[in-house]
Amino acid sequence: MYYLVLGAEVDEDGDIAIFYKQFSSEQELTKKELINLTEVAVAKDIAEERGIHEVEPESKNWEDNEYIGFMKSRCAIELQIDRFFESTSPINLQEVE
Image 1: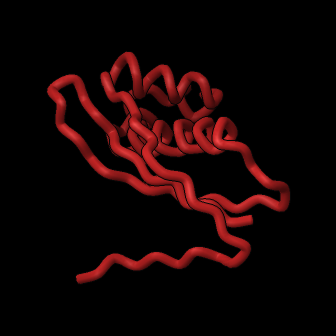
Image 2 (image 1 turned 90 degrees about the vertical axis):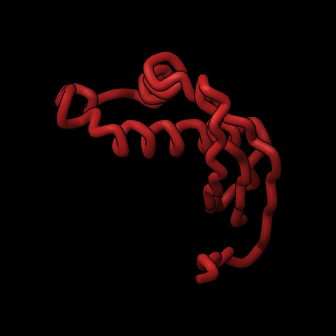
């Protein structure tokens, strides 16, 4: 199965950034599993964008929950996951220019 998850990152100032994440799995995933995968993927993206690996080299060995903790506590970003989509064929999205 192929999945598309849509949501928003909301910071402490109320600024919103829309995101989407795509996943694939040989097994059917539940919403709870998709939420977890999405939180980890977005948290890792945020950590990378903020250069955490350069500032704290040991962060390269972080576990998933440490990335999520970084996103929520140190970056003050909460996720609002709005929609889940599934498909039996790959989802190929391209930005319209």
